[in-house]
Length: 112
Image: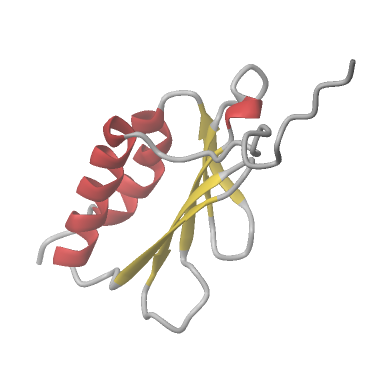
């Protein structure tokens, strides 16, 4: 006897997304850069293997930075990464706040 599973109940591909506890530090950093006038817009993509938070100076441009979450790299290089506009990996690791610290340094400026 063969049992067929209807396609509506078949396993759908998983989707990677940021959790609320992960979005809080990302959006906090985003808010500080918006207040400083550096960033204007963001985009959020939840794909099968990666979740991406993209930061834009203007809406119609390429992203300045991408904050990526790749759970498959959790045991290797770290699941979080900050990637620059040219595709260079600025920082990677398993601690999101430590990875975001590379962007925090860009916010600090000398006051005249």
